[in-house]
Image (cartoon, rainbow, N blue to C red; front, side):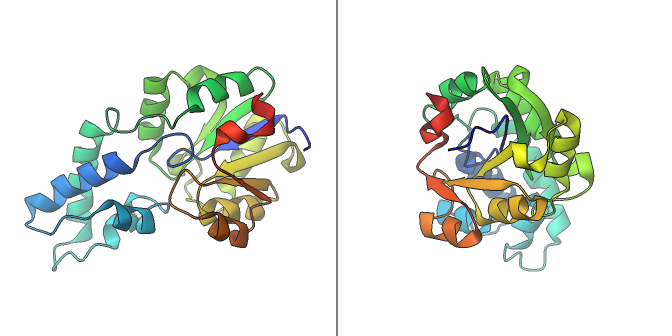
Amino acid sequence: MQRYPLLIFDLDGTLIDSFPAIKLGLNRALAEFGLAPIDLDWIHKNVGRGAKKLVGAIQSNGIPPETILSRFKQHFREVHLQNSPALPGVDETLRRLAENHSLAIASNKPLAWIEELLDHHGWNALMAAIAGPETVDAHKPDPKMLKYILESTGYGAGDALFVGDMPIDAETGINAGISVIGVTTGAASREDLLAAGCTEVLESITALPFST
């Protein structure tokens, strides 16, 4: 496979397992309003398009979604670092990849949370660029995050590979003219990722051919 000098990664489900933190923070918020808790299966089906859309998918019994969102953000901020572990082998793989590639992050997670997680896992110094919704005033699948990273690093679309765990990541890469590899460490199946346009689907970023 062609060697790409720039590797761009999604965060949740690709590098870290954030689903327990999302479930914990959201259920703490729902409990405040007497609403039924959600399970991991619900999280898997609804994540990927930002916290606002995630909360908007809840049956809120007339409680304004903005109210629930505010409480979710507070609870999530309190629990996300301790409940978002790196996926197996990811730390070692990123450090090996950084020896020969520029690395970057593009995530729909709020930028402050992205930076906190990267600092928590010791990955900030590995990244040539970081993009969240606030960086470009847009969420994936809008290609602005990926285009921002290209501009920031000086690479062209043909020099980059985007790695993510959801169909929205494939859609984002296609919109930016960047090849996408899917990983099945998150919420989507191999079949869903291929159907969305991923050129290849791997079990984990540890299977990237550049990681050896």
